Length: 192
Length: 192
Image 1 (spheres, rainbow over the protein chains, first blue to last red):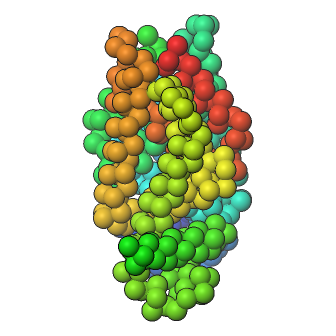
Image 2 (image 1 turned 30 degrees about the vertical axis):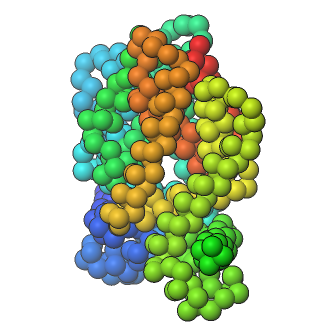
Image 3 (image 1 turned 180 degrees about the vertical axis):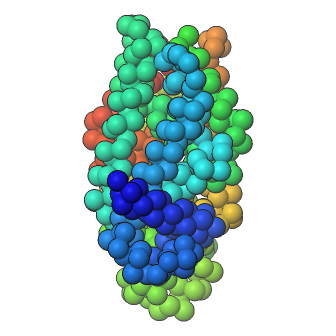
């Protein structure tokens, strides 16, 4: 279905234009009109693909999320086991490469918009629940039935830890190797 | 020194006006002129007390931080010991009362501005280092020399955990009792 492929491709190109603009100026300052100019298309084309700026932001965030998933899968050849998957997912969240830093900065802007938009707050929350379920299943598989370990709580903690450190790395507040060492420390304590 | 008291008092009143406006509309949308109107003073007065919006934001965040400290000290009567202090500090970060929620929303807006302002990113980072040192000393006092526990790493983890959960509570994404239960779970695992 070439039409659908084309549609997704155009939307991805616009999202990429948004990322480029937002990475230097922040997302609040970027208008749909500027995204159109950056992508070399008309404002009408942009409006054909996105109903609003929030709609574009949501798509950009989901696309960044999908690509992060693809990067993780690419690094996990063979039969990696739950511990290695867990480590790869968390490491991807730490903003160690340009794309994941971009994703984190987008996430901050999104968080800021969630203050005034319940729709965005809910959307973020849904995405988080999905990741939490996935991490909880990995923790459960990795630690088994060890006494005192609650996989769902551990998943919540791991998300806050990796996302928070990732934001600090993306903003240049924490050194990448410090963030990695902190996640490693936590996993060592959790997995024994 | 009544003059200094007056100066601090006026700055606090302006910061409170900013909080009221920002809580419904987000901080990006609020101008210094609107803060002046909300506080019932002239734009000239505002400019007398603050050089820029970022200057006012930084003061508002520091004031919120001081007040959080005062609330914690008020709850800690007698000789509470490191474990209880640790629990109170982390609980205060969870956005369970209106003031601390306000503080968290301000923190998100600040984070968003840190994307485009290195000065703000550095300022946040300094505040974080101070809190980290304090939490690390509490962890060290509470767990002693237990093998495998690194107080500085634990402090980093606790900050990310409590701040991240607090943001979710402030945005209505996580229930307050869920956030408290997660912090309690972590402290139980850490302190035994």
